[in-house]
Every structure is written in C-alpha cells, then in structure tokens.
Image: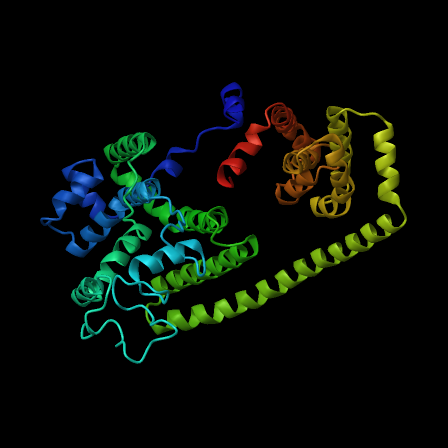
Length: 448
C-alpha cells in the first residue's frame, strides 16, 4: 500500500486540514502557553496553575506517565523471567525406606531400631539376662570389655547429637536458590526501551496527549483483550477453549464499561447504572442467539463431515486415494503443489471450515508417506486459503467487500484492486515453502 501510494498519490490523498486538527480542551489551552511539551507543562502545573484544578492536572499527569509505567512493567517482568533460577527437583539427601542409604543412617544416628551403640537409643537385644540391667541408664554395673566407657559416652550424648547428624542432610536437600546473572539481551532491551521512552516524551505535545487519550478509549482496550487471550495460550495459562471464555468475558466487561461511560456523561447517577444493566441484558440475549446459531451451523458441519469421513473410510476411499497418489511417483514438492492446487480451487466455492473439516482428513494421512511436517502443511493451507479468497472468479472477500462498498464501485473494480495483493499472497506462499523457518521458528521457540 505504501508503494502504491508513492506511485499513485492521487489514489490515497491526505486528509483535509480540518480533519487532521485535534481540538485541545480548555486546561490544555491554558497550560500550552507555558510550553509545547505536555510532560514538562504538567510537571510545572503540579505546583499550581491558575485556572486549572489540581485534580485535573494530577489525572492528566498520570495519563501521561502510562507509557512509562507499561514499559517499566515489561522490563520488570523480563528481568524476573531472566534471573529466576531454574527449579531442579533433586533427590539428594532423601532416605529410601529399606535401602542401603537407610541402613547407613541407622548406623550413624541410631534413631532407627537396628542395634546402634553410639547414642544408647537402640532397641534392646532379643534376649536379656535377668542379672544384667538395661542399657542406656548409666546405672549398670561395670561390664566387661570396656563397657563402662561406652556407657559413659552414651550418657553424655543426648538427643541433640542426633539432630546434629541429621541437620547437614537437611541443609543439603534445601539449597538456597540464588538469582541467575542478568543476560546481555536484557541490557540491550533495557537500552532500547529507555531510548524509546525518551523519544516518546520528547515528542509528547498537547495534541499527541489528546490523541493518546482517544486511543485509550478505543484501540488499547481491544489490544489488551487480544493480548490477554493470546498471551494466556502462549504462556500456558489456559487452553484455547478457556482463552475463548476469557475473551468473551472481557468483551462483556468492555461493552458494559463503554455503555456505562456513555450514559454517565449524559445522565450521571443511578439512572446510568440501570440503563446500562437493561441494555446489557438485551445485548447478552442477542449475542446468545447469534452464538447458538453459529455454533449450530458449525456443529452440523462437523456432523456431516464425521458421517462423510466414516463412510469414506468404510468404503475404502482413503486407501484408494492413497494408492492412487503413491502410484503417481510424486516427489514431496510435486505432492505439495498438487495438494495446494486442489485446496486453492476448493477455496472458490467453499468456506474454509468445509475445507478444513472435510478435505483435510484426506491429505493428512498422506503426509508421513512424503515426510512432510503436519504443522508446516497446515500453515501452507491457511495461507493458500487466504489467496483463494482473493482470486476470481468466486473470491469470497470480493463479495464481502461489494456488500459494504458504495453502489458506484463495481465488482470488476474490486477484482482489479485485489490483484496486487493476490500476487503478494502467492509470493508469500512461495517464500514460506522455501524458508519454512518463517512459519516454524516462533512455534518451535515457544514450545520447546
């Protein structure tokens, strides 16, 4: 689009001056006389500004600091992720019941029954004569074979000695985790983020502050919702189904917030809450019906595809196609071209759901025969379907655009305008096949 705009600037004229002008609110007009930079102007106004309320200055200053807060939060998260020590489950120091290590501990501590003499806490022997007092009291008569020295040692060694033997083992099993050294890539990221933040606030004029506030109410909430849905999947916090529930709940909250703000500006008070609640009930009802309608259509599609696949397999259709394709003696490249051509043609009369659910099960069993990665094949199919939606004579995207375009725009003009983008899609498809890392590098990096 940039190249087309440079070649044909009359096709993409600039907006009129009045549409590019951002009107400043009264407080901004008052403070802009002190300087063009909004950050410096609001910082000076914190000490007091005539004609501007302190509450307004604090609110605008907080909005101005939001980019810095977001960048700082990202850097803090990256630092914590980079320096957190890797948790390794170690079994060092654990005693296995009945094993050799247990026997060694018995001999050292004497805390487990086994005949140890070092502490005097061992079990008595099986047969004890009536004229020999029990051991461990320190009151027995001097026995033979230096038993007196053993008894004295026993009496002088309390249970603390046993704890002193076990304590080093416990210390070895629970090592103190130290943070990892900060990697070089974090400092590079920190420098780039600091330079980006400095550039933002150098160009932070009062007009840009107003544009930023417009984006806060329109673009940024949706961007946060998208990041929350995709981020929960990438980080492993939720499955795709659970992430979809998060997205639906987030959309409900955004709808409630937008409705409430719109009503609160016109009629502040409890009336705004009641009106918002009534409208949300109608929105929820309509959304539920539309969701049920779409889900029923997709479910019936799955039912039909399951019946088709079952009948196709029972009648030996998969085996016939497999033998036919293998009898052609195709190379992996030729098989890929054949499969993509078939899917490209199917993209004219059919939606992507029918192609994925009905026809993909025919190609997937053939992939191991040619040594093709299923993920790579799926990426090619997805990109191919986008190309099919742009190509005449059917081109679903062209008819969608015709439905919302002005009446003077003809279908032939839409097809003509789509041709450069279709060529870009074909080039992208070829680049993806030549350099598979374009599509496989990120999944392999995230899910190692």
